[in-house]
Length: 402
Image (cartoon, rainbow, N blue to C red; front, side, top):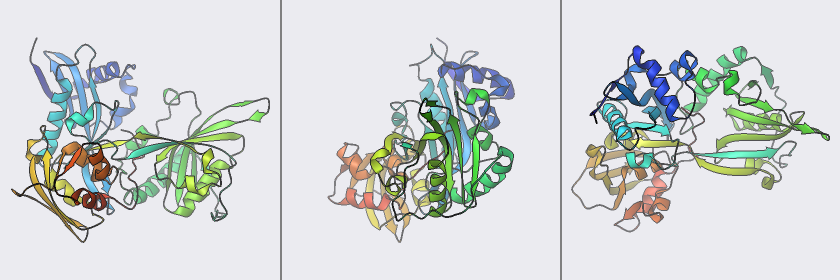
């Protein structure tokens, strides 16, 4: 068995890169039609080789993620991680993960992030789950709002993709800077997120684009109905609003859509629609994990965000893959701002780097992780104090998969 090697790819590697990725995900290679080629950064895409055979892939996309306090933090968006069938359980994924994290540690991003294809893989590499959560909402149309919800008479226009995209880009960029978990988007990100070829539609229609002066919604339609009449499904891809008024107006627009019977939408867990309708039992909600965060450099990452309360705790952190994070760290927060320093003082709380990643955006509560035996309290009261400090005003939410 030959020794595995790893390097960044060149243009001549792209065809094999796609084939390995497609084989790992049980799909067909798209060749030049692959939407991911539009955002792949060759100098940040790694391939693992067994001799001359490419057997593993992974890429990093250069992005920012909004963190509590309406701040933007540099983060490496990890994507297209794959191992060719027949070559698993040989350390290929571990080699890819270690190489990526060490490259980000070398003066680049203090945070990494990804969406996990399987829930049991990435915690072992230090990624924290439930950093952000998704709720699949399914609700019937025609549901009334409770009496206190005001719907304005603002006109909502359904327009072409060409007319919608410039407006959507501007709205999204303003909104994402105020919503923990939202990512920056480069030009080609829109083509990837809203890819609209026949192969992308899964039997649904092309996208419909609807603009409000302070928001937008993009959805597809699945035609349905029976002898009693039409009852099509609206599958919302993205709903982004600058104001609560736009949120109410756009939801009302969807709920009142002629010929539609149901709406489904992956949205934030704390989407207020559950409290806007007059019968919340009709809104079915199912939770799943979304963005996973990996703290690459603890001392650079923790001061990037604001905190909800003052705290002074010593954290004993374990991080075998990035040993520079291991050890005792004093986290001192005053007025929302954090200072992080190494210390020899005894630990108040012990946890691994994945647990810290879960809590970083305010998604998972450290108090819950403590009950799950992921966090150990040595000094009474410190887990509760840290839990409150890490929480934000809004649930973190990431509306795009990469």
